[in-house]
Image (cartoon, rainbow, N blue to C red; front, top):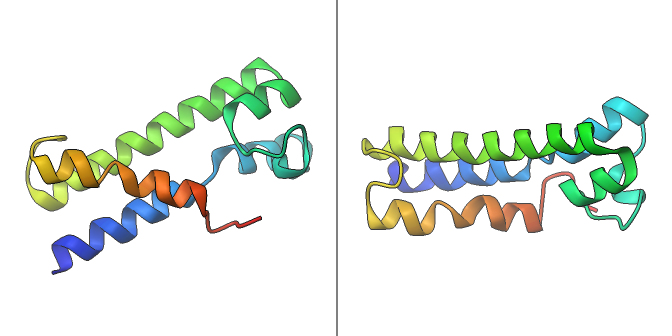
Length: 105
């Protein structure tokens, strides 16, 4: 049971962390959700802050996904994407938490 609950919680935690929010706060002390189109994503960061902050945001987002996959591989003792369950279910949790992050709106 822990082998199922722990990855769900960790996947939600990884997906809830919005790098665009923190990078924008760090660079401009503004909330990215109040700038541009209000979407805390790479495109809005690129439009509002430029290429380099957007590239940093994209890198952080990709690293976040890789971290979630590595955690799933460690918990299930399989290579990343090894089993059907891991490939299907684990990749949706960060997406679900991106739609409803801890920072909220």
